Amino acid sequence: MKKFLSISFVIALIAFSCTTGKVSNQNLSTVYKRESSLLHPAFAVFHVSDYTSELHFGLLSSELLYTRPQNADVFSANVMISYQLKTSYESKEIIDSGSVKISDAYNNNEAEKQIIGEVIFKASPGFTYMLQVTVRDLNRNQYTTSYINIDKSSNNARQNFLLLSTITNTPLLKNYISSKESFRIKYKNGNVKLLVRYYNREFPLPSPPFAYNNPKAFDFKADSVFNIEVKQNDTTSFRFPKKGFYHLQSDTSGTEGITIFRFADTHPMVKTAPGLLEPLRYITSKNEFEKISSPKNKKASVDSFWLSCTGNEDRAKEVIKKYYSRVQDANGFFTSYVEGWQSDRGLLYLIYGPPNVLYKSSNSESWIYGEEHNLNSLTFNFIKVINPFTDNDFRLDRSPVYKDSWYRAVEVWRQGRVYIDN
Image (cartoon, rainbow, N blue to C red):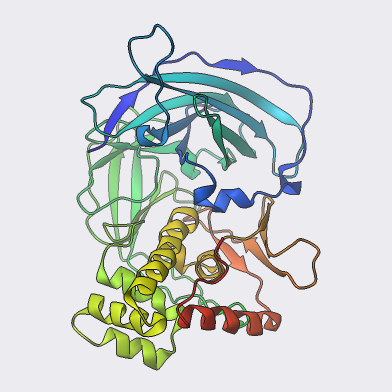
């Protein structure tokens, strides 16, 4: 069982007039390689006022190294969290920066816990920024770096809201909930009536990277509408039991607000028969997928498919583990208004794996499989989509040149082998 621990600390803010390199020029491929680091922090941003914002973070104690210094009585973990705020991925100038060191003592009677804390940073209103955050386990000298979009363009944008767990009174650090999860909503500007639009929609899976498609325009007419009262910056406890997504707005003259998603209760994990079945659509024909979907025992049908691909049970277990670990990682990286594996980036990630080279800019991503500047390498470009429900929606620039590569990759999976085992 997870236990939450609030940490008190002193933040050392350092103003820099110097510059560093542009993030947009750096290979950030480790961002989408979960196994590249032992650390997997979670974050949420909340704008407390026009000029002050909070970066809330959560660390799992199981991912930290606890050591006992000489002459000390207890084991402890020591972590340094550093940040740099820039105007964009393309900018060198550091607007604000700082670091904080936190320590956590180990108790033999404690199960895994989540260490919760916050870092305060300064940013002027009316703009968007990029926050680069590095979390370093000082005992192990292991670190990971995350890149977070900061939106202070208006008081109605999603980061002016914060989701809080009713049980622990700590930030949820995610934008999705389960059917039984109760939460509260904090809003920057205090007392207000929030309009909630509920949508229950089915979205088609993305087409292969060589096939052009014309996405159907989203119908913004909600399935239902209701209100939530925010008093003294906070709400009473709520649950959203229905699957779909809920768009909350303080000002309905525009489209800005915070969206709360209700996927399967197991999200982002893959633990149900439908969760195992549905991603097979990427490597099966329509008729084949319908045949696999027909039996009542979907789990047995999925197992039978993989066994027919691999030829033996041991290989099937290995390939299944790899395929569905990519589904889960895609859910962690790319979830937007759909689960991550159902997005354009999730499509590529599931079949090809994480890219060897990744470039991120404020409005795009470029994925390279193979060596950069090598004519035999594959390059995929994604453009950020303006979406009122999420800032994590990217559309693949499709091209017929990907057709042969795609069919080769799919065939490798169908032969019971992992394609590009990074």
